[in-house]
Length: 202
Image 1 (cartoon, helix red, strand yellow):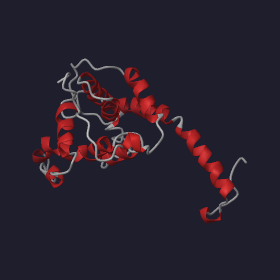
Image 2 (cartoon, one colour; image 1 turned 90 degrees about the horizontal axis):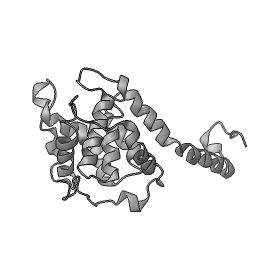
Image 3 (cartoon, one colour; image 1 turned 60 degrees about the vertical axis):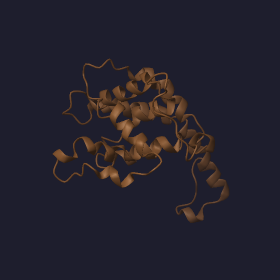
Image 4 (cartoon, helix red, strand yellow; image 1 turned 135 degrees about the horizontal axis):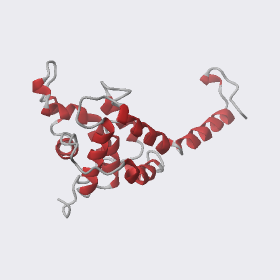
């Protein structure tokens, strides 16, 4: 079979959907390649800072790595702003939807809301923004993790003098995470927390 026969999904057969499912899983094998290309393209993304969007992402991942963070946090730090170009007004949701099947629930939640939590640093300086918007999430299991992520690995990652590691250093980590079986309960670990910073590295 080269293509399905149906033109409406309700008319598809079991064989056709099995064929399509196989194609989806084959396509998934190359997700890491596409993400690495998208990350590289951030070099030409939104300007105005002293570092490029790629530089910011790499600096975030580098700081996470040097803090002794686990692979979920490091890859999330690398990808947290990957939506800046295509989804500038919902970039956090964009990034969260990409990593959600492959990392802990905790990490996805922080990714989803980091943009809102970042407003704490500038919301009082920009008309129409609410610096304290993050307070609506106070009491959530992962609230403090998002605060810490923004403080340690986001708001401070615009320093052109920082010794940032290159993208190819993180490539094996991206490939490892996106080679996982999607939505594996052993990976998602719903309701569990891992510290951003290991005590030995703090």
